[in-house]
Image 1 (cartoon, rainbow, N blue to C red):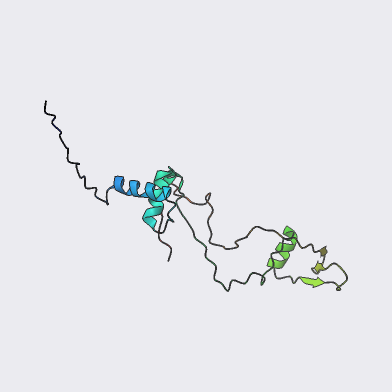
Image 2 (image 1 turned 180 degrees about the vertical axis):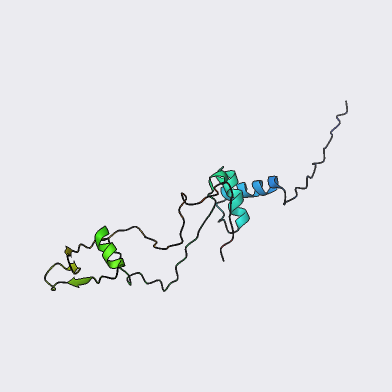
Length: 147
Protein backbone atom coordinates (compact mmCIF):
# COMPACT_ATOMS: atom_id res chain seq x y z
CA UNK A 1 0.00 0.00 0.00
CA UNK A 2 1.04 3.45 -0.67
CA UNK A 3 1.29 5.83 2.19
CA UNK A 4 0.32 9.36 1.61
CA UNK A 5 2.18 11.95 3.53
CA UNK A 6 0.55 15.28 3.74
CA UNK A 7 2.72 18.11 4.69
CA UNK A 8 0.93 21.09 6.04
CA UNK A 9 2.29 24.50 5.51
CA UNK A 10 2.56 26.51 8.65
CA UNK A 11 0.28 29.47 8.65
CA UNK A 12 2.24 32.60 9.06
CA UNK A 13 0.25 34.93 11.16
CA UNK A 14 1.34 38.49 11.01
CA UNK A 15 0.93 40.25 14.29
CA UNK A 16 0.48 43.96 14.24
CA UNK A 17 2.92 45.33 16.81
CA UNK A 18 0.56 48.18 17.64
CA UNK A 19 -2.21 46.00 19.02
CA UNK A 20 -2.63 45.72 22.80
CA UNK A 21 -2.08 41.95 22.51
CA UNK A 22 1.25 42.38 20.72
CA UNK A 23 2.43 45.03 23.17
CA UNK A 24 1.51 42.83 26.14
CA UNK A 25 3.25 39.81 24.56
CA UNK A 26 6.39 41.89 23.97
CA UNK A 27 6.27 43.23 27.54
CA UNK A 28 5.95 39.68 28.93
CA UNK A 29 8.98 38.61 26.89
CA UNK A 30 10.92 41.61 28.18
CA UNK A 31 9.97 40.80 31.78
CA UNK A 32 11.07 37.18 31.36
CA UNK A 33 14.35 38.37 29.85
CA UNK A 34 14.79 41.03 32.59
CA UNK A 35 15.01 43.77 29.99
CA UNK A 36 15.28 47.24 31.58
CA UNK A 37 12.15 49.36 31.22
CA UNK A 38 13.51 52.23 29.12
CA UNK A 39 10.39 53.68 27.62
CA UNK A 40 7.04 54.84 28.87
CA UNK A 41 5.34 52.13 26.79
CA UNK A 42 7.48 49.45 28.47
CA UNK A 43 6.49 50.75 31.90
CA UNK A 44 2.79 50.88 31.02
CA UNK A 45 2.91 47.36 29.56
CA UNK A 46 4.76 46.03 32.58
CA UNK A 47 2.24 47.56 34.98
CA UNK A 48 -0.57 45.97 33.00
CA UNK A 49 1.08 42.53 33.12
CA UNK A 50 1.62 42.60 36.86
CA UNK A 51 -1.90 43.94 37.32
CA UNK A 52 -0.66 47.05 39.08
CA UNK A 53 -1.85 49.61 36.54
CA UNK A 54 -4.96 50.20 38.68
CA UNK A 55 -2.78 51.07 41.67
CA UNK A 56 -0.89 53.87 39.94
CA UNK A 57 -1.78 57.07 41.73
CA UNK A 58 -3.05 60.12 39.90
CA UNK A 59 0.27 61.91 40.11
CA UNK A 60 3.85 60.76 39.92
CA UNK A 61 6.66 63.08 40.89
CA UNK A 62 10.26 62.31 40.12
CA UNK A 63 13.13 63.82 42.09
CA UNK A 64 16.59 64.04 40.59
CA UNK A 65 19.61 65.43 42.36
CA UNK A 66 22.57 66.93 40.60
CA UNK A 67 26.07 65.68 41.33
CA UNK A 68 26.63 69.03 43.08
CA UNK A 69 23.79 68.45 45.56
CA UNK A 70 24.90 70.03 48.86
CA UNK A 71 24.60 67.12 51.29
CA UNK A 72 26.11 68.86 54.32
CA UNK A 73 25.09 72.48 53.75
CA UNK A 74 21.88 72.25 55.80
CA UNK A 75 20.83 71.07 59.24
CA UNK A 76 17.23 70.25 60.03
CA UNK A 77 16.19 71.28 63.53
CA UNK A 78 13.10 70.36 65.47
CA UNK A 79 11.87 73.00 67.90
CA UNK A 80 8.91 73.30 70.28
CA UNK A 81 5.81 75.03 68.87
CA UNK A 82 6.29 78.07 71.11
CA UNK A 83 9.84 78.57 69.85
CA UNK A 84 8.71 78.16 66.24
CA UNK A 85 6.03 80.80 66.80
CA UNK A 86 8.65 83.18 68.23
CA UNK A 87 11.12 82.56 65.38
CA UNK A 88 8.43 83.07 62.73
CA UNK A 89 7.54 86.27 64.58
CA UNK A 90 11.07 87.58 64.09
CA UNK A 91 12.79 86.57 67.34
CA UNK A 92 16.45 85.60 66.96
CA UNK A 93 17.92 82.26 68.02
CA UNK A 94 21.44 82.15 69.41
CA UNK A 95 23.54 78.99 69.75
CA UNK A 96 25.96 79.11 72.69
CA UNK A 97 28.48 76.78 74.24
CA UNK A 98 32.16 76.08 74.65
CA UNK A 99 34.02 73.36 72.76
CA UNK A 100 33.99 71.09 75.83
CA UNK A 101 30.30 71.75 76.63
CA UNK A 102 27.08 70.64 75.01
CA UNK A 103 25.66 73.50 72.95
CA UNK A 104 22.40 75.24 73.82
CA UNK A 105 20.00 77.29 71.76
CA UNK A 106 18.67 80.46 73.35
CA UNK A 107 15.79 82.80 72.73
CA UNK A 108 15.28 86.03 74.69
CA UNK A 109 13.23 84.14 77.29
CA UNK A 110 14.33 80.48 77.26
CA UNK A 111 17.32 78.14 76.83
CA UNK A 112 17.16 74.66 75.27
CA UNK A 113 19.73 71.88 75.03
CA UNK A 114 20.72 70.70 71.56
CA UNK A 115 20.96 67.01 70.67
CA UNK A 116 22.28 65.86 67.31
CA UNK A 117 20.56 62.82 65.84
CA UNK A 118 21.49 61.04 62.62
CA UNK A 119 19.13 59.17 60.36
CA UNK A 120 19.86 56.88 57.43
CA UNK A 121 16.63 57.91 55.74
CA UNK A 122 16.58 60.67 53.16
CA UNK A 123 14.31 63.61 53.89
CA UNK A 124 12.85 65.74 51.13
CA UNK A 125 11.84 69.21 52.23
CA UNK A 126 9.80 71.02 49.62
CA UNK A 127 6.58 73.03 49.74
CA UNK A 128 5.18 71.56 46.50
CA UNK A 129 5.59 67.79 46.88
CA UNK A 130 2.21 66.07 47.19
CA UNK A 131 1.59 62.83 49.03
CA UNK A 132 -0.90 60.20 47.89
CA UNK A 133 -3.47 61.53 50.37
CA UNK A 134 -3.31 65.00 48.80
CA UNK A 135 -4.01 63.88 45.23
CA UNK A 136 -7.63 64.81 44.58
CA UNK A 137 -8.38 62.82 41.42
CA UNK A 138 -7.14 59.28 42.03
CA UNK A 139 -9.02 57.89 39.03
CA UNK A 140 -7.00 59.79 36.46
CA UNK A 141 -3.76 58.03 35.59
CA UNK A 142 -0.80 60.10 34.49
CA UNK A 143 2.55 58.75 33.37
CA UNK A 144 4.98 60.78 31.34
CA UNK A 145 8.57 60.56 30.18
CA UNK A 146 11.05 62.34 32.42
CA UNK A 147 13.04 65.11 30.67
